[in-house]
Amino acid sequence: MKVLSTDIDGVLLIKPDIFEDSRGIFLETYSESKYRAQGIREVFVQDNYSHSIKNTLRGLHYQLKHPQGKLVRVTKGAVLDYVLDIRKDSKTFGEHIMIDLDDENFHQLYMPPGVAHGFFVKSQYADFEYKCTDYYFPEDQHGIQFLDPELKIEIPSESLIMSSQDKSFLPLSKIEINCLPS
Image (cartoon, rainbow, N blue to C red):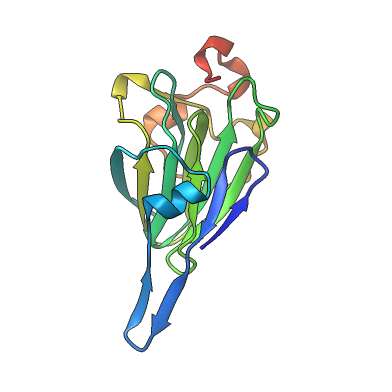
């Protein structure tokens, strides 16, 4: 596998080795020792799955008291995956990256605890899997307004499907500093 750094400290793009023959393909989606050797030392305690239709925009989510590192991948379909650095002490605070993840390249994205995460579904539907370093606590769910013009996040559609909760999140500049991770 190849592991590439991104413009946000600690966020890694992982390109797995894919073995293909007349039967199809095989790839390893996780091996603790190999990922640990690449600097991903957190222990994953929960796996999540979502199925979303085209033009769904999920996020930008984070937990404050129980920050989650995530290792994400698409098993079917295609998404634009977004990571926003909201760690108040980070040199890239307020910056974001956007990465294509799909069922052809099988790339994964690792993000450390303390960043906000979301994705946009480009295909008819997408099956999306997350490995998380902490459990999901509904009462600790927070978010940043994806459509905040100050963030300059490009989303390739105007016909967005969003939850009422995601629509209600505040812009980053309106969130109190004590409500952001260190």
